[in-house]
Image 1 (tube, rainbow, N blue to C red):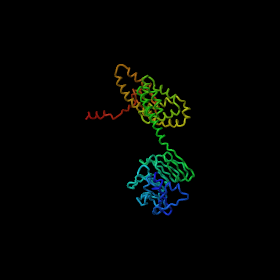
Image 2: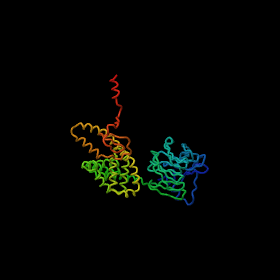
Image 3: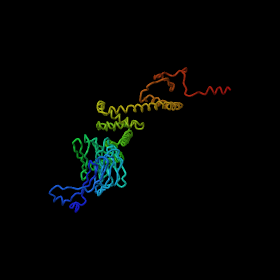
Image 4: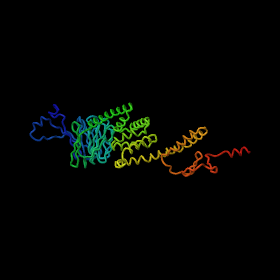
Length: 438
């Protein structure tokens, strides 16, 4: 620009050839070009023997101070632009270097190689500061994006990869070409990316990062507002509204808390805890029913939440016809996953119920010393109305309770004196008698 552009001061071009040399050509200014009536012959300003093998790429730094060349000899060489004196040699790639690119924002240079890697080098001490691995073929092109914070690379497998420099993580892989991607460049404003491949396709990409970030920010703000509304509903004990909101937000822990509150509220009203649940189930879509059954399957794996999970399942099967549930894809499999844990919980309850008989028998025996038979009658009424959750699988031996014998699951009349009574534990009466005789 200015006088340099007019008189040609500082303007130059660089070329690399199959003869493995690097040449600098000074360019005339606009004043010479405007007055020229024929072709202008350029003369070499300086040249250098650059590499021992073919030169694949050359790149000029944004401030025109350095020139970088990449070769099949696995090295990248940095040259002083004004004299083509060698400044540094970057070694680290295991195969030929296909591309190199200076950053416009930092003193770094990125290189891509046939060893399927992209490397980032510092121009201060010429050391490798980052290595990006993930391509399954040679990396043919590399460019800086997002103000120098990201890299985009193109491979011989037709894939483009987006990298974050700080973490060296691949953020996205784009499959748009069916053959090698030989061309890759960024628009001046950095909003568009152009790729060209051996499949005869040129693809233009638009950077939508800002739009996606704005969308995610809007979604986060909406979720925060909904979370606040959910907390307010729970605080004011508006559990039915809280349940619908928690289902929309897909918050399993909040749903569990709200369902517990709803059941407790119904129990306080002397209800079974199913009335409100059944009313809600009738308003749910099958997709929402499928989602809540999935939560129930997870809750049912823990004993502390199994009762609530079974109540919700009961409300679902009582409110929606079995044919409808069976036709919905995924629901039969979810119910099949609930069944084994449900049977395990029922067996645990049956075991606790059976073990409680010893305590009931002890309390009844203690109450029989009283002149009044109210406690005995209460126990017999309770025993008559009580049932196991699951039917007993097998009954062996006999059990004596209150003078009655249950044999093979059938109650027998009063035990005779000749029936042998099996005591639990070893009796010490005989040993005590022997001790007294001695």
